[in-house]
Length: 202
Image (tube, rainbow, N blue to C red; front, side, top):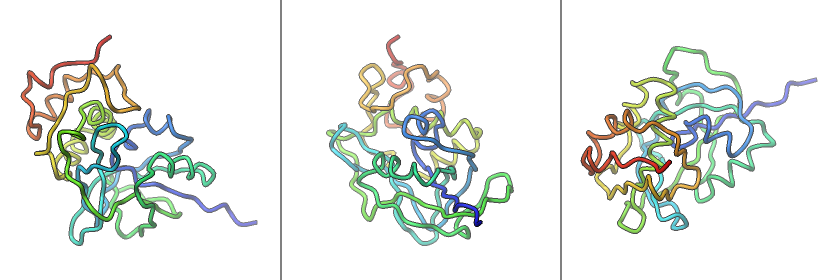
Protein backbone atom coordinates (compact mmCIF):
# COMPACT_ATOMS: atom_id res chain seq x y z
CA UNK A 1 0.00 0.00 0.00
CA UNK A 2 1.47 3.35 -1.05
CA UNK A 3 1.83 6.23 1.38
CA UNK A 4 -0.63 9.07 0.89
CA UNK A 5 0.87 12.00 -1.00
CA UNK A 6 1.88 14.91 1.23
CA UNK A 7 0.93 18.51 0.39
CA UNK A 8 2.65 21.73 1.45
CA UNK A 9 1.62 25.37 1.07
CA UNK A 10 4.19 28.17 0.94
CA UNK A 11 2.80 30.83 3.30
CA UNK A 12 4.40 34.25 2.75
CA UNK A 13 1.92 36.59 4.51
CA UNK A 14 -0.51 35.94 7.34
CA UNK A 15 -0.08 32.18 6.87
CA UNK A 16 3.39 32.60 8.40
CA UNK A 17 1.56 33.15 11.70
CA UNK A 18 0.69 29.87 13.44
CA UNK A 19 -2.40 31.20 15.21
CA UNK A 20 -3.68 32.68 11.95
CA UNK A 21 -3.24 29.37 10.09
CA UNK A 22 -5.19 27.56 12.80
CA UNK A 23 -8.21 29.81 12.17
CA UNK A 24 -8.56 28.29 8.69
CA UNK A 25 -7.75 24.62 9.01
CA UNK A 26 -5.55 21.85 10.27
CA UNK A 27 -1.84 22.11 9.47
CA UNK A 28 1.29 20.20 10.37
CA UNK A 29 4.99 20.93 10.56
CA UNK A 30 6.54 24.15 9.28
CA UNK A 31 9.88 24.90 7.57
CA UNK A 32 11.11 28.52 7.13
CA UNK A 33 12.37 28.92 3.56
CA UNK A 34 13.21 31.33 0.77
CA UNK A 35 11.34 30.93 -2.51
CA UNK A 36 13.18 31.89 -5.69
CA UNK A 37 11.49 33.00 -8.89
CA UNK A 38 8.75 35.00 -7.15
CA UNK A 39 8.60 38.56 -5.82
CA UNK A 40 6.30 39.77 -3.01
CA UNK A 41 4.37 43.04 -3.30
CA UNK A 42 1.69 44.93 -1.45
CA UNK A 43 -1.36 44.73 -3.69
CA UNK A 44 -5.11 45.29 -3.62
CA UNK A 45 -6.48 41.76 -3.90
CA UNK A 46 -10.05 42.48 -2.77
CA UNK A 47 -12.16 45.51 -1.90
CA UNK A 48 -14.08 43.49 0.70
CA UNK A 49 -12.17 44.61 3.79
CA UNK A 50 -10.87 47.97 2.58
CA UNK A 51 -7.21 46.95 2.85
CA UNK A 52 -4.34 45.66 0.76
CA UNK A 53 -2.65 42.29 1.12
CA UNK A 54 0.70 40.80 0.19
CA UNK A 55 0.87 38.83 -3.02
CA UNK A 56 3.62 37.19 -5.02
CA UNK A 57 4.03 37.01 -8.75
CA UNK A 58 6.57 35.24 -10.90
CA UNK A 59 9.79 37.22 -11.32
CA UNK A 60 12.99 35.70 -12.63
CA UNK A 61 15.98 36.30 -10.38
CA UNK A 62 13.88 37.49 -7.41
CA UNK A 63 12.98 35.81 -4.11
CA UNK A 64 10.82 36.11 -1.03
CA UNK A 65 10.72 34.32 2.30
CA UNK A 66 7.95 32.34 3.92
CA UNK A 67 7.12 29.06 5.59
CA UNK A 68 6.45 25.70 4.03
CA UNK A 69 3.40 24.35 5.84
CA UNK A 70 2.15 20.79 5.65
CA UNK A 71 -1.59 20.73 4.92
CA UNK A 72 -3.69 17.55 4.77
CA UNK A 73 -5.18 17.10 1.31
CA UNK A 74 -8.72 17.36 2.67
CA UNK A 75 -7.89 20.79 4.13
CA UNK A 76 -6.65 22.36 0.89
CA UNK A 77 -10.12 23.55 -0.09
CA UNK A 78 -10.34 25.56 3.15
CA UNK A 79 -7.11 27.38 2.31
CA UNK A 80 -8.26 27.86 -1.30
CA UNK A 81 -11.30 29.66 0.09
CA UNK A 82 -9.16 31.81 2.38
CA UNK A 83 -6.91 32.73 -0.54
CA UNK A 84 -9.68 33.32 -3.09
CA UNK A 85 -8.56 35.85 -5.66
CA UNK A 86 -5.15 34.15 -5.87
CA UNK A 87 -4.12 31.24 -8.11
CA UNK A 88 -2.70 28.11 -6.51
CA UNK A 89 0.17 26.70 -8.56
CA UNK A 90 2.71 23.98 -8.00
CA UNK A 91 6.32 24.95 -7.28
CA UNK A 92 9.45 22.82 -7.48
CA UNK A 93 11.66 21.86 -4.56
CA UNK A 94 14.62 23.37 -6.42
CA UNK A 95 13.06 26.84 -5.87
CA UNK A 96 13.08 26.44 -2.08
CA UNK A 97 16.04 27.09 0.22
CA UNK A 98 15.58 26.24 3.92
CA UNK A 99 16.83 28.79 6.44
CA UNK A 100 18.53 26.34 8.75
CA UNK A 101 19.88 23.82 6.30
CA UNK A 102 17.10 21.39 7.15
CA UNK A 103 16.19 18.78 4.58
CA UNK A 104 12.77 19.56 3.13
CA UNK A 105 10.11 16.85 3.10
CA UNK A 106 9.03 15.12 -0.08
CA UNK A 107 5.62 15.98 -1.46
CA UNK A 108 3.74 18.46 -3.64
CA UNK A 109 4.47 22.15 -2.99
CA UNK A 110 1.96 24.92 -3.70
CA UNK A 111 1.99 28.71 -3.68
CA UNK A 112 -0.88 31.20 -3.99
CA UNK A 113 0.12 33.90 -6.47
CA UNK A 114 -1.25 36.62 -8.73
CA UNK A 115 -0.53 37.74 -12.29
CA UNK A 116 -0.53 41.48 -11.60
CA UNK A 117 -0.08 43.99 -8.79
CA UNK A 118 -2.58 46.73 -7.97
CA UNK A 119 -0.88 49.34 -5.81
CA UNK A 120 -2.42 50.16 -2.40
CA UNK A 121 -4.44 53.38 -2.27
CA UNK A 122 -6.34 55.43 0.30
CA UNK A 123 -9.42 53.19 -0.06
CA UNK A 124 -7.41 49.99 0.38
CA UNK A 125 -4.28 50.96 2.33
CA UNK A 126 -1.77 48.69 4.01
CA UNK A 127 -3.55 47.95 7.30
CA UNK A 128 -1.41 47.76 10.43
CA UNK A 129 -3.71 45.13 11.99
CA UNK A 130 -2.72 42.79 9.12
CA UNK A 131 0.97 43.73 9.22
CA UNK A 132 1.03 42.97 12.96
CA UNK A 133 -0.17 39.40 12.36
CA UNK A 134 2.44 38.82 9.65
CA UNK A 135 5.35 40.29 11.59
CA UNK A 136 4.49 38.44 14.80
CA UNK A 137 4.44 35.26 12.72
CA UNK A 138 7.83 36.14 11.25
CA UNK A 139 9.24 36.55 14.75
CA UNK A 140 8.26 32.94 15.46
CA UNK A 141 11.23 32.18 13.18
CA UNK A 142 13.62 34.85 14.44
CA UNK A 143 14.61 38.46 13.93
CA UNK A 144 16.51 37.77 10.69
CA UNK A 145 13.46 36.13 9.16
CA UNK A 146 11.34 39.17 10.08
CA UNK A 147 13.92 41.54 8.61
CA UNK A 148 13.94 39.50 5.40
CA UNK A 149 10.16 39.84 5.18
CA UNK A 150 10.48 43.63 5.35
CA UNK A 151 13.35 43.76 2.86
CA UNK A 152 11.87 41.28 0.39
CA UNK A 153 8.46 42.99 0.18
CA UNK A 154 7.90 45.84 -2.29
CA UNK A 155 5.37 48.65 -1.96
CA UNK A 156 5.94 49.94 1.57
CA UNK A 157 5.69 53.48 0.20
CA UNK A 158 1.94 52.98 -0.29
CA UNK A 159 -0.62 54.42 2.16
CA UNK A 160 -0.38 52.74 5.57
CA UNK A 161 -3.24 52.94 8.06
CA UNK A 162 -2.93 52.44 11.81
CA UNK A 163 -6.25 50.65 12.27
CA UNK A 164 -5.35 48.99 15.57
CA UNK A 165 -8.26 50.52 17.44
CA UNK A 166 -10.75 49.69 14.66
CA UNK A 167 -9.14 46.75 12.82
CA UNK A 168 -10.02 46.09 9.20
CA UNK A 169 -8.30 42.72 9.11
CA UNK A 170 -10.83 39.98 9.95
CA UNK A 171 -8.28 37.65 11.61
CA UNK A 172 -6.83 40.38 13.82
CA UNK A 173 -4.83 39.41 16.95
CA UNK A 174 -5.47 42.29 19.39
CA UNK A 175 -3.46 40.65 22.19
CA UNK A 176 -0.16 41.23 20.38
CA UNK A 177 2.54 43.32 22.00
CA UNK A 178 3.18 45.95 19.36
CA UNK A 179 6.25 47.74 20.74
CA UNK A 180 8.70 45.34 19.10
CA UNK A 181 6.63 45.34 15.91
CA UNK A 182 6.75 49.15 15.78
CA UNK A 183 10.55 49.09 16.00
CA UNK A 184 10.80 46.58 13.16
CA UNK A 185 8.35 48.49 11.01
CA UNK A 186 9.72 52.00 11.55
CA UNK A 187 12.44 51.90 8.82
CA UNK A 188 9.95 50.97 6.07
CA UNK A 189 6.79 52.65 7.35
CA UNK A 190 5.21 55.85 6.09
CA UNK A 191 4.05 56.50 9.68
CA UNK A 192 6.09 57.96 12.53
CA UNK A 193 6.82 55.95 15.68
CA UNK A 194 4.21 58.07 17.46
CA UNK A 195 1.60 57.23 14.83
CA UNK A 196 2.59 53.55 15.00
CA UNK A 197 2.22 53.47 18.77
CA UNK A 198 -1.58 53.63 18.85
CA UNK A 199 -2.32 50.15 20.18
CA UNK A 200 -5.39 47.94 20.31
CA UNK A 201 -8.15 48.80 22.72
CA UNK A 202 -8.36 46.40 25.64
